Length: 112
Image (tube, rainbow, N blue to C red; front, side):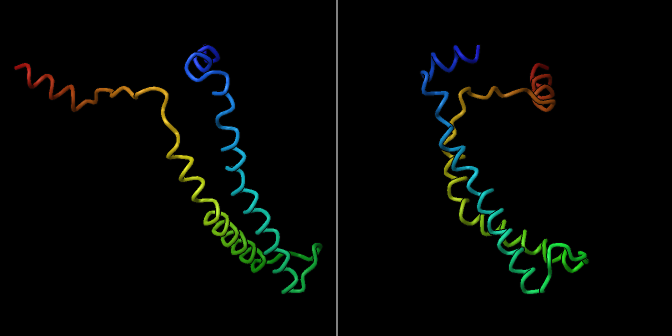
């Protein structure tokens, strides 16, 4: 059913329409992890820590700060793509407005 729908409305290219956007969408994750690992290694070098050393509460706070900084950088860089991508999405179906309880009360009151 879905295959026939896409082929009839968008053609065979409809299946490949979101592939490029998906590749650009993972850029935020890639930027986040690369920057995080870099900051984490710089923090370890600054503190003279080695990989096998025991972790303390201050290390946890440092890792959280590295994560916050890297996520902020990744979001600032990749946000314009995400916003543009969301605006380009057009719903295939027009959403049907469902009646709420308030609509039923108004309908019943207007009959009297």
